[in-house]
View (cartoon, helix red, strand yellow):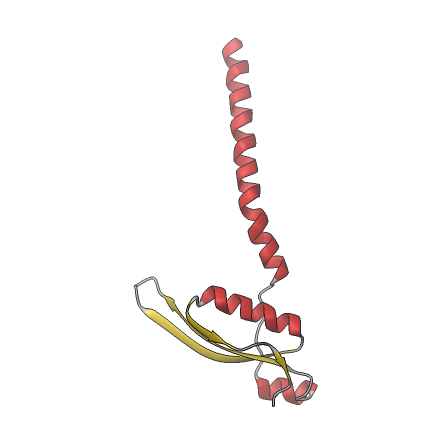
Length: 112
């Protein structure tokens, strides 16, 4: 009986510590994902025609990442968005996804 109580307390303590560790790790990642949701970039021609060229938010990005087979994947893209928040969120994730040799602009309003 004494062993069962001691074992139960140890097991409960271990589960509590493990639960706290898991919550601590996912707490920050979840907050970042809520702050910067993944959004899609639209074609600038299409969105400019739909909203008007002066109302579109745009930004460009160039970067690289290492692939699973130790190769370098490069990207160079211009994205257009309906809001400044979407523009910043997309740029955040591009910087996260392509962290090497980055070069990018600032989110600006208008296609000019």
